[in-house]
Length: 427
Image (tube, rainbow, N blue to C red; front, side, top):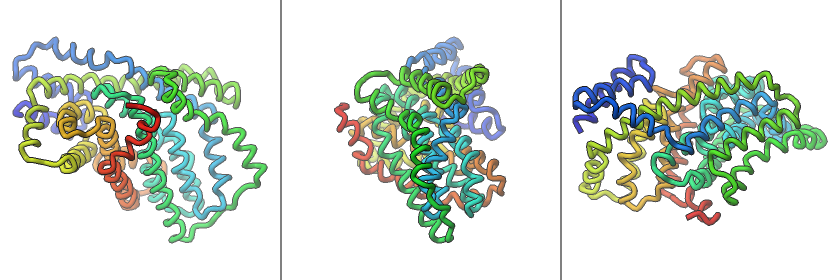
C-alpha cells in the first residue's frame, strides 16, 4: 500500500504540472524502481509485454477506418439522410446529432474522434435551427460517449486484453447499453425542443429520401459486419478492423468516388501517431499494473472488501464511485490497465460476470469525458461552438445525469449487457 501511495502522489503532482500522461506514469514507475531497488530492465520488459498483443492491432485499423470514411463522403451522406427523413420532427437536428453519433460509434471506437467529426457537421446546423450553442456542444459531447460503447470500441479491446475476456462477447454485450443511452438522449432532445418551441424544418419528399437512402445504404450496412462476423465467427476483432478499412476504401473510392489515394499516406501517418500515443500509455500502464499485482494489492483489496461483508450490489456501487473519480482525472486507457487488475479478482469472487463488469467500467470512465476537470469532449465541442465554457457545462448537467441513470441500469440489471450475447449462443 505504501508503494501505491508513493505512485499515486508522484503521478498526481506530475499530472497537475501538465506533464503528458504517459511521461507522468513512466517517471512515477522509475521512482518506484529507484526506491525499491528493482532491476531497471523489468520496466522495458513489462512495457514490451504490455503491447505484445494481437488484439491490440485492431486499434490502428479502427482509427484508420474512421479517417477513410470521413474523407470518402460516407459520414456526410448519412447525416443528410437523417436530416431529410427526420425534418418534420420539431428540433430534428438534435436527433440527427444523436443518430449520427450512433452511426459513427459503429466505425471509429473513439469518443473524441466522434465528437470532433459530428460536432463540425451538426453543431452549426443545430444553431441555425434555434438551439443554443451551449446545448448543441453539450449534446454532441454526450452523444459521442456512445462511441466507445457501441462496437467497435478501443476501450473494450483494452479491457478484454487486460481481463482476458472475449472481446467479441464484450462487443455484442455493448449494443443494448449504447442504444439505451441513445434512446434516453433522443427523448431528452424531443422534450427540450418542445419546451423551447423549436421549429420543424419539414420532411423532404419521399423521392429525395429514397435517393439519399440508396446513396447511404453501403455506409449504413457497415455495422452489420460486426454482427455477422461475431455470430458467424468469420473474423477476429483484429481482422474485423482490417475488413472495415478495406470496406471503407471500397465504398469511398468505387461507390462514392470521393476517396483520394493522395490523402491515404496522410491518413496512415495520422493513424500511426494516434496509435503510438495509445500504445505508449498502454506500455507504461502495463508496468504499473505489474507493480500493483506483485505487491499483492488486488489480494489486499479483495480481503478488505470481503471483510466488510459487502453484497455484490454494494461492491458495484463502490466500483462505480472509484471509476467515476478515476475518469475525471485519467484517460480511460491507463485507468483500465491499472485499476482492472485490482478490482476484477474481487468482482469475480462476488460472482459478477467479467463481461458485465467490463461494460460498467468502460461507461464509468466515459462519463469523465463530459465531466470536469478533464471533460475532453466538452473542450472539443466548446471550441467548435465558440461559446463560453460555463454555458456548455451548465447545459451538460442533464446529459451527465442521463448517462449516469443508464449506468445505474446496466450496473444493477446485468441482463441489459448479457442478454444479447446469451441469445447469440455466447457462453
